[in-house]
Image (cartoon, rainbow, N blue to C red; front, side, top):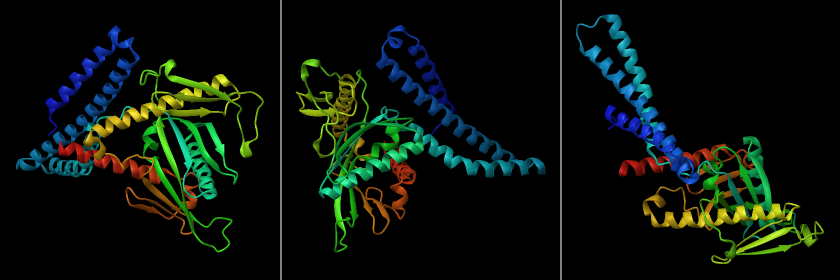
Length: 360
């Protein structure tokens, strides 16, 4: 139960963190400073929520005391009844906000992301769907005012993509998009289908939080860097220099490439960004796998092989299988209207984490 002593503890913790952040050994270390600032922001939010709950609880106690006092005059009792009604309306939400604030913050929520979309089973139709997903996401980013830039693309002969990767920058991008990873399945009648039969194909989406150099060490001697000439649809060369970059991380076998920029230097920087994100993602997955309770609090496994969503075009239906949500507005979703589904996934994740907090 939250009481005034708990609020005092939070305020004392804030004071300690302010002192710690002013110390030279912390302010000079980006990692330590980042951790302190994240902890400070969390504690400050907790203190604000605790203050709100305690103010409402105190107001409730005062009003109840007035109503319990037979000597209270009519006007005072009327005000107390109004206050009680107001508290009864506000307190449940304030207590829920407190429970949400108690959830340890995900340090990756505020990071920018790298998204990779790959055509899966379904041949040409899977490639077209890969392109559809890319356009759906980028339209959403445009609506949100987020910046996005293509890193690498492998066009398919049908007009779609075998795979495409791109960066997304904006406020709380990873927090909004982290549940998009997995297999997206499409059901529709291909343009080449003469019998009108519905075909099923798929594409996989990976959402990687951008990693800083302080997050993951990549040694130069562990890398093999190759250059090649960028290619467009049909395999034709799109420029005359070997500006495209392929980097192989020898210890893990992870291979990344970038050919979107004209400059070899820029392509190398972009490829290194993707490599760090991939290695950081693998590191975080291993940590999560070691913590069974953490896995229970996730919306789905986040594994690329997990079927998370079905896009049924004949029925104009989108179904997210993790939260059993069905929307009959697929046409609008494909135009970037993603807020309803992303908000539902976020709220479901919050409820799971609140439940986890209450079980501790």
